[in-house]
Image (cartoon, rainbow, N blue to C red):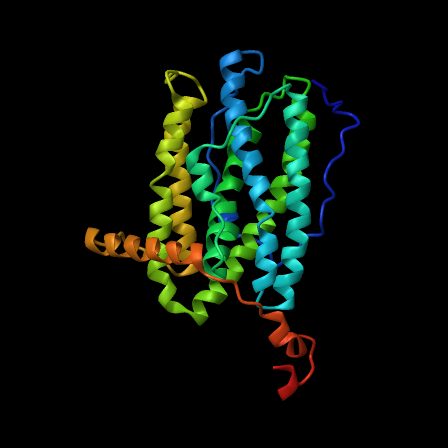
Length: 299
């Protein structure tokens, strides 16, 4: 297998950051692994790391689904964003392929939880929330808290790998910020979505322990793996706070019957999204978006 030369490896182009794109998720302090790292010379550690990177690789491959968001984009601003994101996601896919080659690893199949969290849908409001705000927010947690902390700097391959990961982190933070901004706008227009949004987020968060159990396996004393349970709880709590700031998750935990009803509404909304048809918007509002006065023929 070809090994990547860290000194000559290409790094994805950094896009200019918009000052208003500061994700709510970034306001939360990250999880501290207290210096615990993987041993890249230990076969068991390499297998665990390969599993984590494989899920990231699958997530980046499905990240190009944002191209479908372009069709239903509500504005030129949204269309420009999705065009840029699609290019960045394709770049991330190549970066993770380079990381696999640098570590001499072969990707594994995605876990069913990752397949579920990455599943595509055609309902624009749900796509914005679950893919751009919540989904990429959790991806950002994995990249900036787990991978950047637990890859050992003493290994000569790691500095170049972390350089690539920091590029991905910066761009993923912009994606999350957009998802939060667009979700807030959608909820202002469709406040009835708050309940199913809360229920669907709760349903998806309930799948995370299954992913952790696959990672921990029979190694409960591993310095990194022993902290995965608390790390997942940190992620779940951060997502709940993210939902509170976006206005769809209550400050206090609702009664069980309300949570159950919200989950049922969320599951129904997800089922709808699997059969829904996306509807184009720019062909209807392009004149007003460009600053012209629409006329009857353009509608």
